[in-house]
Length: 515
Image (cartoon, rainbow, N blue to C red; front, side):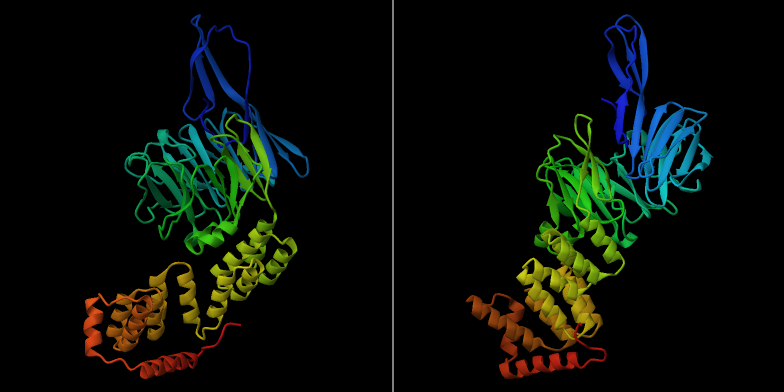
């Protein structure tokens, strides 16, 4: 089998040979050269030709060892690029073409084919990866190297036990701010993360309890929003924020995953079908809403082990297991939605959803609005898809008079109770923090806060008593038993104290309802 490459189409040259009964063909690493032996004692050498790459706007084809032809798909103009040395690797993406020969690296902007940036290479390049700001090349002597598109070297990430000959494009991923490398020495379950500015490790290596077969970094957003997706030996697809390291499982039976090049969308081959998540970050909030932001192309069937090689604009390129490349059109509306939201035009995004009338687009808008704390937009979106419980929650949050109280509820929505409590404590909203823990049935924590701040201890005991009465249960917690015996509970006084706390919160400086 040929080695895996990042190319989008390729064919093999066929030329007659005197070799008889060719046996034991071998590829040279991840390069494009093949050698074999014949039954009559002859040796056969070959290489892949007519390698074609595409990024949605430009197509390039390597016609022979020294010439690459590039074609602008929109204007139908073409250019021929000739090289003195043999072309070893090519990569096209993010409005740049990177061509590595045996001695030099040529970097072209797709807007200008006449003046490339050129720098010398120390060894034969075995891999090229690109992102919006820079690109990565790898060889067996210098390891992993990052360069800008002007040809300036950024860094050379290294770690003990790095063996570049074992790495392939599924084991290395690049984004604007970090590069992730799968460490093969650690049972295949460790991912090392480095910054792209100086090549320094970012936090501790991420570890998974099973062998990881494929990794990919999201391309859109800031470094705080960067996500790492990976597929393990059981073919389960996970995503994890690089900054938080909170692992969440997206899907089983996954063969391949690929992030969109300009947005936060994720495409994956799940159970031999193309599946798109318009807003996968919602897995850290409401998983029911996440299901509504997912789209599965029902008629798609690409066979086993299909790979997504490109996800740009409103199309995916999928390489089937037989090597055929299939172009799959996806909905253009999520991309338009992302553009409007990135520009802060929430009203236009709402009008787009009203025009499209697609529940998955409405759900995506609602999820993104909740993340951006745009409650009015999320209210409209949840009403459109008849999510009554989420709509009631949004209305409740809008009724909270303080910004800190609203932020705390939204942190709870994202399943971050400790962060929600911290927001309230720092703002001096002790009663709201205690009541939040009571609602979450974190009784011990609620009592700890009441004792620590020396207020509302009787409130916690009263709520505990009412809860046990409703549940027809008996008190088993010794702390609550002892305090209940020591402290008489005056229900009228407790309710008056609660009402007083709500009044004080509404009268805080700067307190106002969400509009």
